Length: 127
Image (cartoon, rainbow, N blue to C red; front, side, top):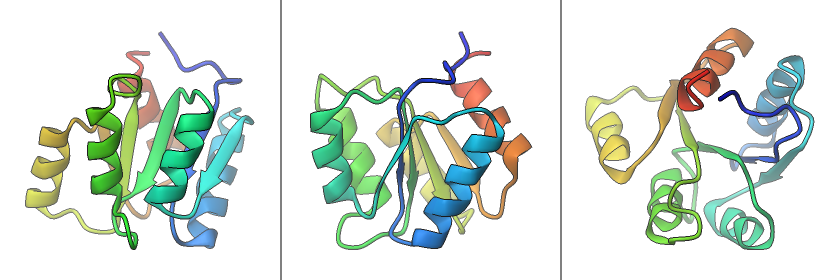
């Protein structure tokens, strides 16, 4: 089942330019219901206020990393199944393994384009 183009998506990144890039890529793919958070703590607040269909989060953020955010999301029974794509500039094998163990649905290494993002989203949603 593909992700509905009206489905709420949350982008989490402490770098405003990266939020803008991902938002633009999502817009190119037809997704317009996009919110953003500048760190994991703000993301958790938004997740508690609104039901998202997908989280796209950077790994490297302060004070709460994307990995910590993922672990929080997975530990809450209300959000445990929420699709989560991790974005990182590093393709360290240990990071990929740690994210997989923590329950990440997919992993994107920067830089990436709209086709790569579409492929990752389609894989997560089994499209």
